[in-house]
Every structure is written in structure tokens, then in C-alpha cells.
Length: 488
Image (cartoon, rainbow, N blue to C red):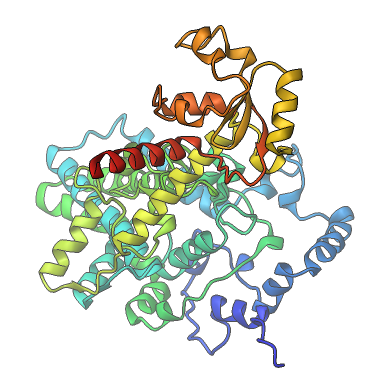
């Protein structure tokens, strides 16, 4: 008999990492290739990743610990007065911290004109949407396709946010989705709010946790290739020179344009984007899945152009929407939809409503199961002893308070004084089969009454056809009684 072949893990990882076929090599000119990235974290083969996923992981980790015991990477060493400078990624420190701080300080003596404020806001919107609608949903997740004018717009103003090239940004983000909440996640939320917000960029990463994802589709897009090759030049012009030239040429505010339309615009765009990595994994609800950290919250959506419904996004990453309800804030979704109506975008992807509601129901059921597990539902029928009716009558003589209801023996002795109908009524059922009386003959008891009764189980009558849900049994008996009365 032939057996079914198992998936070759190395081959599968090769496909996921994009190393199974030749790929165009894109190299940024100058120091642009090092902006906000680290080649050492992506220079890994599928074979290496596959071995980490197999039984060799523990052995490899043991060897790695032995190797680093005497010569630890700087990321694994504690911060000290002597080595603190080695822990810092200085290029990123300058780009996302030092320059913004200088911009903020300069506001004390550089007063902008109202036109400069308006320009800064417009460029903020352009750059922000270029990240969310472009870098994120278009390129990182292929949630839709866009015509050349849209791709050029997003590539130009996205570079102006100073968050790296499309190629680098989308690659990092795909790795984040592939390895969410693991040591290979570039902005692992488990390491704290500060780390996932900015710390991962400001510190030197650990090369032991390098990873990669398939970006063949990005390499095939000439817009992505061109932007990556000339990223430094495009970034400088879009992010800083353009606002300076516009403000200077039209209303003589070169410095204001540089500071407010350039440095501070970049700072606020970066902080908004960083909130997707931090805030969206920290506050909010998890209506679709709680195995990982992503959450949905309006506040996060408000500061990130609609990227705050992150729990939904991680469950359905290729959906062009982040928000489903009409009242949820997601301007990026509306921009994508509008461009599609103008013929500039197409193939907008959405997950089926059935799949979405399945996720909602499963998560609700998971929460209900967790609540249910903490409640006393009575001893399971399978754990109760089996009695025949002769044993029941004998036991009833020795143990007062036994009664049969729906084939289950209950000890109601402790409930005599609590019974809403009084002791006399319940005493008439002791030592007898009270199924009919309990299930509508005298009282049609509530679901709560059946739940209380379940906590009094002591045995099951053999061949009685007893089921754990006596309330359903009562409903069946009442329905049968009504049908019989109708026929009469």
C-alpha cells in the first residue's frame, strides 16, 4: 500500500522565503540600502529556517548558547557604561530620534506661516496614505493592484516618510506576519510597548533570529526597483527639499517648510506608523483571535489612517479593508475604493463574509468555553455509577433525598429548605421517579432549575437513555404533550 508523501519542510520554506527561484537583485546606491534596515537579519537560507522548525532546533539552540557563552553578540549582552554605544543602531537613531528632536527644538524660534501649516498637513496626509494604502496594503499584502500613476505617487511620497524603501519595508512587514510574536518578528510585541514602537529600530538586532520572506513580486515591479536603487535621493527630495522649495518659492518660508513640512511631518508620520507595531498590539479587543497580540481599537485607527483594526487585519491580511463597519474609521479603505472607481486601482480583495463571521463565532465560542470551564455543571454522566431500579429503591431506604429525573438519580436532601415550591412538594417525589412531575406535570422548571439540579447528580439508571441536558428533555416532553392534546 503506497503512502502519501509528507511536505518537504525545506522546500516549503524555500518557497515561502522566495529562494526557490532566481530573483532580481536590487541594490540601493550609497548608504540608502542601510537606512532603517539590517542585511544581517535577512541573509538566511530556507534550509537554515527549515532546520530551525524541525527537531534539530533544541540541539542547535544548545550549540548556539555554548558558542555565545564566551563570545555573546552585543544584543545578548547587558547594557553597561562601557558597551552602551555598541547596542545602539546609530543611523536609525539619527533618522528617527535625533533629527526629530532638533526639529521640535527649532519650533521655539521658527514660527511658521499658516500656509506652511497647511502644506505640512497635506504632505502628512500624502505620506501617511502612501504608507498605509501603498507600502502596506498594496505592496506588502497585495490586497489590490494599482495603475502606474498611483504606484508612482505612493513610491514618491512614501519615501518622504523616511521609513525605508518599499522593498525593505514590505519585506520586514511580511516577516512580521510570518513570525508574529516570535523571536523572528522584527517588532516582537512580547518584548514590550517601547521595543515594538521604536526600540527595535534603535538597537542592534540579534543575527541569530534572522528571517526572510518571498518578495519576488516586489522585485518584478520596476517602480519598487527604481525607488530602492535611488531611495536616498528620492527620500531627501520628497521628505525635506520639496516642502522647503514649495514654502520658499510661494510665500518665502524656506526654513518653515523644511522644519514643519519636512522634519516634523516625518516625525509625526513615523510615530503614527510605529503605533501599528505597538499600540495596535497593546490596547483594544480581539474579536477574531486571541492567540496572538494584535487588537482592534478606534484610537489606534484614528492615529494610523485606519490601521487600528489590527486583529481583523492579522486574520485576513490580504483584505483591502481594515474596518468592516460603516462607523469604523478607515480612510485608507475609502481611498483605495475611490481610486478603484476612478480606474486607478483594481482587483480589490476581500475575504468572504462567511469566513469573517466564522472567525467571530469561533472566538465567541472560545470565550464561552473558557467561562463554561469555570462553572460547576455537575458530575459528567460518564463518571457516575450505574444503578438499576432495584439498587435505587434499596439506596433510597438508606439515603433520604434520592429522586429520579430523566433517568438520573439526584440527591435533593440539601435543597429541601431552598426549594421555591416548598418542602412538602419536593418530599412527595423522594424515592420515586419524578420525571413527569418535574418536566411539566406539576411545574415546567426553568433552565436555571435544571442547572441547579445537575449539581445534585449521584447516579444514572441503567438503560434509561439519560442525557446530560435535562432541560432539552423537558422541552421534548412538553412538545409531545401538546401534540397529543392537539390530536385529542
